[in-house]
Length: 234
Image (cartoon, rainbow, N blue to C red):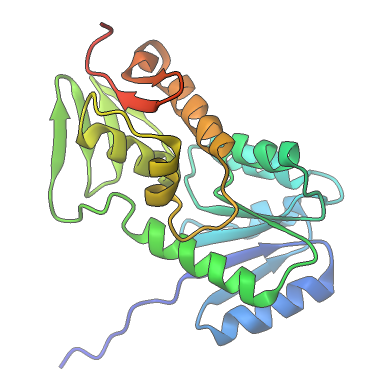
């Protein structure tokens, strides 16, 4: 009889305040997660491993900032979900976090219950990012969206996307030329994540279009209505 159990998701907590690390480690461990802690971005780079399921990342760190750490991971094409923890709570700070590849943003001081809820929401959402497990691939001309591998390729080029970006692509490409409002996108992609604004959608779309390069026309905006996926430039 097979008695093996699924391995607990591993969370890397990065904060230069030891008390915060200890509180998060204690409470998240009680929720069944495997926790590793780092007190600097430099230490986090050493402790980060491919089996990491999520990072809780403070922005204001000594040495390398949390934003820079996130950007470093994204430049290495690593899509691990990142939740920023920060005392900086302006809209511009939040959008900066999203622009460097963050998936969520929690302001300090925070409720431990809120952190746990956000962690669960992100892990639930990214555990099956496409919502189409077992349904193979979507092929549109030379564009291939692989729901099993959570990958997008155009011709022979692989487009490296974060899990949130992949969800956005899947949603838009399911019905080419259908316009999705920002509200619809938030309800579907960020359905379990509170405090997401329409500008958050715009930041993610801008980042995806930049990655698409000369195929940026694949995602277009109709002013006042929303976004759609285009097969052709016309």
